[in-house]
Length: 264
Length: 264
Image 1 (tube, each protein chain N blue to C red):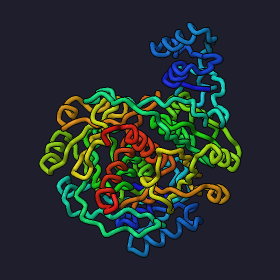
Image 2 (tube, rainbow over the protein chains, first blue to last red; image 1 turned 180 degrees about the horizontal axis):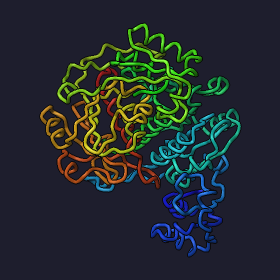
Image 3 (cartoon, one colour; image 1 turned 135 degrees about the horizontal axis):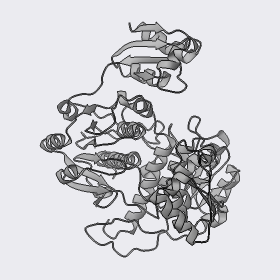
Image 4 (cartoon, rainbow over the protein chains, first blue to last red; image 1 turned 180 degrees about the vertical axis):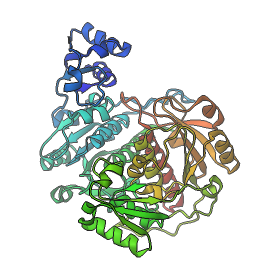
């Protein structure tokens, strides 16, 4: 279930399998809601009008925006997410002073593996950073909050519909498959490991994110190829898992762009 | 007012001017609360026991942790924040394989300027990223949520006590002062500008962050020396202001470390 105008627009834009749309009387009176409902109707999606007060009872949000929808599951099998067939769209710099140079094929690939990431806001932000940085996929393993949790859907700001998501209950078998597919598997840690700027993200790298409080379970920490750390300055304790994922994803993106650029 | 054990520990560790501590009967029964209360008492800070149910009525959090404190204001004048006297602690990599090389003096300085950043969670995350990346100061200008808002205090995870904060109502005069102090002033934008990896963060750079929805006001956008953008991949719309600040702050930290390293 997705709630609100912006997420529904993202779902429509991404061509997600929207089963039905529900709109409240208050929603009908808003232009943005009307537009998205008309758009859905025009695509042959069934639109149901709800009676007054019904949306408030069924919605997860405290102040629902008057529209919600039931959307088909989005997650894909691991093999499909890891196939090299997914094209990486070049980054968008709308008013860059010089046009981008012709770009050789990209070989670097980054996937994120979440193990026991519990907070829906954090998983939503991980999806958003992964999407915005051009990562290949996000794999949700045991203990991780359901990517279809309404709070995850909202926090992802539409990225749920943009990046391949894999729901893979067993992290150890997932790590084995990633190794077979040529991925260097690096656990993230607040307590030590290779400085993340020393990691070569022009190759295939799987970043394994752990629980907000406890980090990675011992068996997962033993199964990865190494640990990676974002060095902290000052007296800050650590970044949260979403902030660390953001830093790592954009360093990967920086290195891939640099590898493509003839100037650097 | 700071609420909860972890934030109070951070305030004590940072030597903040704690005026008084308040503890509930439930708080007294928790070991972590007892420890921090004893610690405060040992430093001559007045500790007040609250009656049953009082903390729940006065606290901002839904489930208060049984302890809160009144702490003196932390913000400093702009001139003091910009003085070169603040030493930058080298990054901590607890189990790095090789010891760090001797480091020449650091000249790069990064400050963040928030204009109309409304969401307390975002400002808290900006403080946390600025602190963790070794930035010099965070300047809160007009329209920005009060850094002493309880939600900001919580979201900053103690960083409020670590990094110099300046409350400076007038962004235009602040930008003028930053220019006089040798800072290149770059507005952040989702719509175009210089790619952030092309910015030389080994010099003095002020990153100007704007409102979550509207970006920078026109007069501020006209007053900066240029705009900086984090290029987006795929179909992601944009990063939120806290995520963008995280990416920018850690790119600055990466460049400063690289400038210090004899190997690169």
